Amino acid sequence: MATRKEIEERRQAVMDMLDRGANQLQIARQLKLNRHTIAKDMKAINRKANDLTNEMARETINAMFQSCIRTQNSLMLECWQIYSRNNDNIRDTTKHVTMNIRMRAIELLDRIVNNKMTTICNGPAMMELNRLNSEVASLKRGLDITV
Image (cartoon, rainbow, N blue to C red):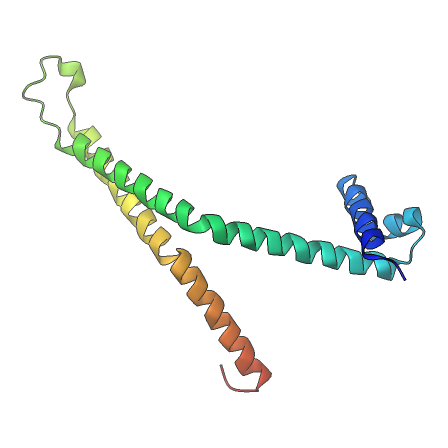
């Protein structure tokens, strides 16, 4: 039976070969192992990668979400400032805000607001709620309860 260190070294070798484009059969032949062992190693590698990805997401998602909302708020403010700009005090007519520019600012503002609402509706709280709903649905399926 392999030690923990040997398993980790073997899994590192599997990852290295995967990085070079090898498939399970090629890895098994190269490492002189059966394909079932390689498949188990790949499952363990994927499980570990998923755990690391989920941990990273949990640690960063709130900050990323907050950054998105702040950026959208800044963009909305800029659009309103462009739309509201008064041409009366601007001598250089090439710097006047035309009706076309004002309309484009309003259209962009509309897109930003819609994007912000999508961000909020799909944000961290909703993602967690959806995950919990999926878990409840899974439990119900396991109990043969109509979902």
